[in-house]
Image (cartoon, rainbow, N blue to C red; front, side):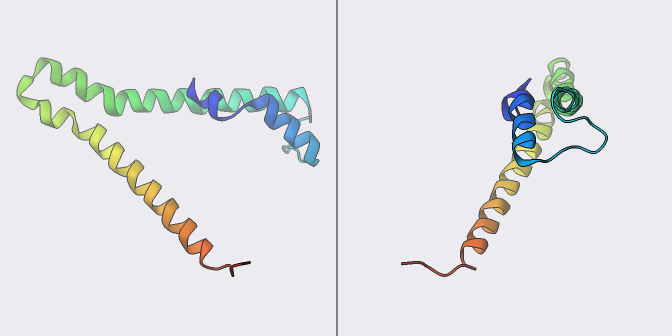
Length: 105
């Protein structure tokens, strides 16, 4: 799953151990890695099912109804617009943060 590409539970556990951090109720070490792996699996599975239902179902519905092909693309277009909007907000925040600091040079 893509979630495991973004987050490596073993590396995260090593970072926790190196920094002295821990998760409440979870024993540091391999228990932390196991807990992180389980949480990543749950959230990744939920996200995959959600996207399949939201974006995949309209496409399957549109296969049988050729007159509704434009409507079947709507969930994908909305998800792309939300993604673009979130990226733009991140860029705006980084520009505003940059303007708060004085130049060293």
